[in-house]
Structure formats: C-alpha cells, structure tokens
Amino acid sequence: MAENILEINNLTVTYGQFKIITEVSFKVKPKEIVCIAGESGCGKSTLIKAVLGLKQLGAQIEEGSVILDGRDITRLGVEERRQILGTEIGYVPQNTRGSFNNIRSYEVQYKETMLAHGLPFVKADAIDVFKKLNFPDADTILEYQPWEMSGGMNQRMAIGLAVLQKPKLMLADEATSVLDVTSQKEVIEELSKLRDELGWSILFITHNLGVASHIADKLGVMYAGRMVEYGAIRKVLDHPIHPYTRALLAAIPGKDRKLPQGLEGRPPLDGAEWTGCNFVPRCRFACEACKTKKYQLIEVEPDHFASCSEGME
Image 1 (cartoon, rainbow, N blue to C red):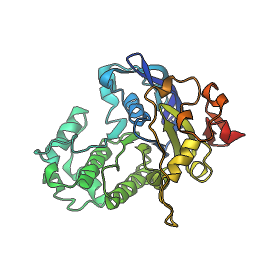
Image 2 (image 1 turned 180 degrees about the horizontal axis):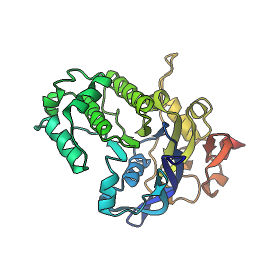
Image 3 (image 1 turned 30 degrees about the vertical axis):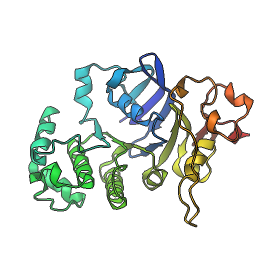
Image 4 (image 1 turned 90 degrees about the vertical axis):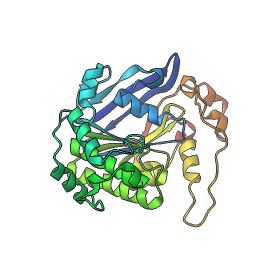
C-alpha cells in the first residue's frame, strides 16, 4: 500500500473554456477521514466527480493528477475507470433515492451492482454487514423496496452496498445533507465505525462544519474553486486563519445561544479564473494587495495551510 490512498496534485477542472476548480492539492492517508467544506457553488461536488472520472456537462481535468494508492488514474479510459469504481473507490451520493430504483427490492439491486463489478453477491455477507452496522430488521431488509424506507435508511443501505464491495477509498458527497439530525448522527457513527473496523479512508464532502467536526481528521475549506484553508481538524476549527473559514464558523449558532452571523453575497462563478483573492468582494479585511496577489496555499504552521495574507501577518 502506498503512503497515501489518494493524492490530488495541483488539480484544475474546466467546463468548456471556464475553470471551475484550480490548483487544488491535498492527500488522504490510510484510515484517514478528510472533509471538504464550503458553500454550494464552491466546487466540492465537482472535485468528487473529478476523482470518480465523471465527465458530466463537459467537465475535464485540464491540469494536475489524481493518484489512487500510488497509481495515476487521471486519464483512464471508460472501461478502466469502470473497473476501479465500486471495487477500489466506493461512492455514497447525496440523493440515494435517485441511485436506487424505487420499485425493485434492495436484494435485486445489490445483486446487479455486485455482478456489474465482477463480484459475487452473498446474501449472508450482506446481512452480516447490516448487523455490524446495527441496521433494523437486518435479516429481512433486503426484501424491502426503497420507497418503503426513509431517506436516512436509503442512505444507510447505500453505505451497506459500498461496504460489500470493499473499496480502498470511500467518497461521500453531502451524504448527510438531506437527513434529519438523528439520521445524520447514525450515518456519521457508521462511517467512523467503518474506518476503525475496515481501515477505510474517506473523502467526505459537506457544507456543515458541525458534521465535519465530529468525523474528520483533516478539514479543507473550498471557496469558488480554490482550497483556501486546509489542515488538522482542530487546528482549522480552533484557530481559523482565512476570513471565509471564520465566516463559516460565525454562521453556526453558538452554545451560548449566540445568533449566527450571515455572510452576504455568493461565491463568484468565475472565481477560479481570478488572479487575486476571489473572496475580496465579501471580505471586510480585503486591501488593494489582495486583488492582485497570486493565489497560493502556504503552510502557516505544521499541518495548517491557508491562502490569506491577512491571517498570516
């Protein structure tokens, strides 16, 4: 096994001639959970699609590389890519109702998915996974159809299917965003348990820093196609440097019943194209130098990186 399960090196993704993600770099080590956070429109899901190799709406990796367990998978062909999806890279989408056929049993869909990846389907193995994850009705749940289940249970069934395929790396794209608080807690606990028991590495996409604080070892904060802060979870949350990270934290209600502070505006659609800091229009600390200084993620202290000169001076 390589030192890192996943390496994203200077990744730039385009839609047509427009950059959507630019110069994104980070690593996921074995048994490590890395969360990527930010508002909608910051490029988080595009990052997941780049790792999966999904060329939706013309998305292309223009520069950089995606290294999986020491192997460059950046420009694999369709068939080569299909062989590693599910077996080496697992995926839990945001909308699992759209992933399952609502009127076919889970057992039929589990079997079809496993066979599509050249893997045997053993019902007893699936039931064993469900019991380990404390699923209700573990012995009979495969007989149900998705429409009979809640969104939270469908999400958990998607996780169960991913476990059966035994991937090296799990990608979870906003896997808790459509769930109620109780279901979020269950999914977070199950993913953490899988990391501990199966040695999984997980790349977890979220807009919820509260969720990230409970599951992540490392946290990356993305804004308008760029990574603006990255590091050990406690360093980033306890000592945030970039004004955008601070704004995200300020938007969370405090334990002392402090009202959340909103952040006006939206990430610019062309933010990945900017020469200077693309957070300038929304930043109360911005100065003239911020508009022209080239983007660069700098290590401020061991295991803590930020792109903001204001926070480093």
